Structure formats: C-alpha cells, structure tokens
Amino acid sequence: MTRLPLTGTLGTFAWRMLATVLGGQGFVILLGALVARATALAEGADNARTLLWLGVALAVLAFVGAGLMRSPLGLPLGWVVQLLTWASAVVVPAMIGVGLVFTGLWVLCLVKGQQVDAMMAARESDPEAAR
Image: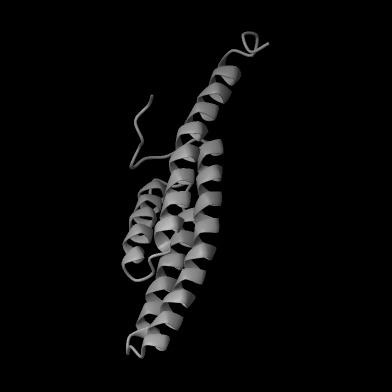
C-alpha cells in the first residue's frame, strides 16, 4: 500500500477524481450551513448568521480546493476541507455522516487515482507491454 500524500501534485486522473469529490462535498456543506442557521434560529441563538457564513466559507473553500486540484495547493487544501468538515460536526452532528462519506471517498479516490495514473504512465512508456 502506498502512503497517502498530504502535499504535491497529482496525476490527471487522480486530481480529476478528487476535484469531483470536493465539488460534491461543497454542495453538501452548503446544505449543512443552512441546517446550522436554522437550528440556531430555532434555539433562539444569536449566532445564526455567523454559523451560516462560516458554513458558506467552508463550502467556498471546498470549491476553491476543487479548482486548485491541479496545482500543489489543491491537495493540502482538500485535506483542510476534510478536517474542517469533521470539525463542523460540533455544530451540526449530522456532519459526522458527511465526514465519513466524503473522507472515505477522498481517500479511495486518492489511492485509486494514483494507481490508475501509474498504470497509464506505464502504458505510455511501453505501449507494446500494455497489449
């Protein structure tokens, strides 16, 4: 098993898969931000607007991370989004499920994406052996 990289650039297949995960995660985080706001309003808390904007900021961070996945900043930003998604479970406990699903997808796509990129590189370096 290869180790999970925290930084660096990725092959084409891997960064495309990871960008897709972060994009989908961003939309779910937006929904979580709405839940956080609605819960705070229902409880009469004064921080409903702050919770909404923090959730929106995390979703935007996920979208920016998806857009930067080609660059060396994309991978660390994606890991930060994973950690902050888990941290958001303090406010909305249902984000534990979101964290489980998307962190699982993140790790799976990172591992499998690297494997596919390695196979594609081997195929490109020796086209006769790939047949």
